[in-house]
Image 1 (cartoon, helix red, strand yellow):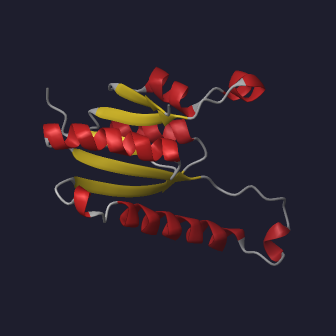
Image 2 (spheres, one colour):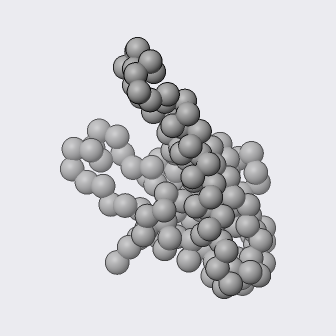
Image 3 (cartoon, rainbow, N blue to C red):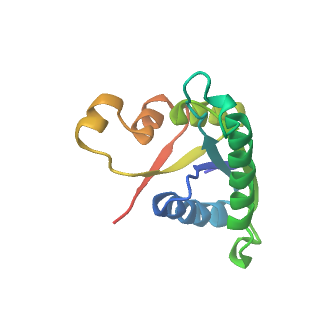
Length: 147
């Protein structure tokens, strides 16, 4: 099985850390590159709020810088030294669309994604990111669930 590129969407939760751990096992065995993708969603604010105490564009830029630093910190552990990583932060309104777009544009062979188990009305109205990725992905998707 050839699996050169594995995508792991990271939101810094326990679930995404478990997905990363699972992807690492595959990457070590198959000599794959892991793409860590974090999506920063734009801040919604009422018109006119940008003249208040906060400049929301600067807040979004800070969120992107913080996410990049956190991704780089995540892969600095010695156990990751033999793994080839690509860390990417994108600005996107839809996490599932951002994951699919990145996957299609970067020859991803497998997506390793966590499920957070949303339920009830929220799941009924919006579905989950994982479920949307499963339906739209052009490559295999490995769903990792917390026990």
